[in-house]
Image 1 (tube, each protein chain N blue to C red):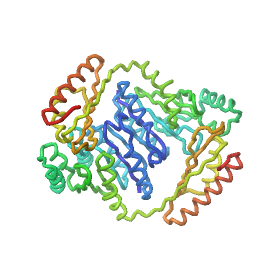
Image 2: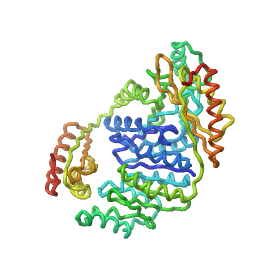
Image 3: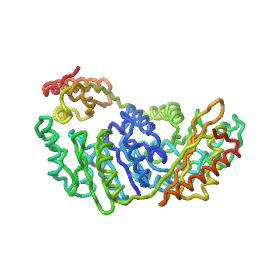
Image 4: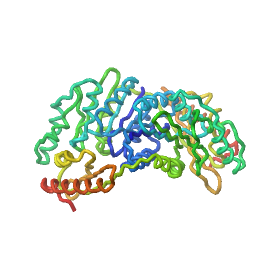
Length: 260
Length: 260
């Protein structure tokens, strides 16, 4: 179940905002059991986005999630880029238009060209209701790959994730269980801990361990140790996690580490 | 002067940390006049990283900056992936080894296999001194493309950026000037402002304008308007910026916007 995330927009690539959308989606997909391979941020350039999308589609992922570029402005062209990457027509989606019209009706504003533009979607795209803002999202199936396009405004994206994307993904029967934990070890540098991690991991192919140096306290190195285990069976995953934690703590203590 | 940024590491892709490195580097490169096209975060997988790197290298960028994957642990394999993408050997770099040895000597620790590993670099790589941590960075030239590999720990990456990367890039004669500004308009939605932005931009191909909806105050929509102008000549860029701001404010006021 490989997945890729695209976070689109000049403001992200040029560092004017922190990419909180990438972290949110990466975290949610990981907890759903997806193997998230990467996150790609690109500037608002139709040709660039469609080329890179085409490359990622060639890797045959199960899932692609995009954020950004769905709004009414001239540089919001994500759905045009997706249509191009899929060799599909960009068409006026009547269901999307109805969503947009009802939104502007409710605040007494007319449908201008800029507003109608938000209803242009790749052929066979399914609009996703935006409960907060105006631009609908879009859900597209292409072969074995599912594509969800969501707005870039974090509150809108998160609301649509919870009301539409996650229920949809769960209905696909993603069932892998993930368990994780973190502990802190004081007194040994990361390069010393590395040896213990490799030794313990030899026996646990489904586990992932990462050490994060956190600087020094009273002259001693502080290291966070993060462990993630996935398995089809949740109780099996939890058991493996417990074993790894016990073995790792023992080895780290033997190397001089203190675990508070 | 196209540039790409790679921020490597499971913790970024899986959303366990916010990608502050991408924002830092994207911002610094933009201010240096580079056209940053994208930021790519990938999990710690040698084959995946080398494949995607190869794809980006085929786009012939002037610059690639990577962060992450230089440390002593089993999953720190960025330089191996770069060597693979470039079809170069991974060799023990004696200058890098000397940097690492002097660091561990100073804290009275021996050179283990995990520590020596940080001196393995693609052939013809130039090590970059790490003034804070242990893992050296690496600078590689391949055809017209410059590659800088830096550690993922933000304080280390930023220290090496300031002491090595930015001086190096400036010595290449990057001279494009960038000027930017932001103002706020109250009382008109983004979809109304969109029309004014398109009209004004028609006359200014080197400018970039982005509107960011900031929610509502006293029932009225609040919109931040960001404008960036680049030009070889700084005073020319500043003049263009002033003109755009004046024209845009006038049009937005005509559409009912209030600019405090």
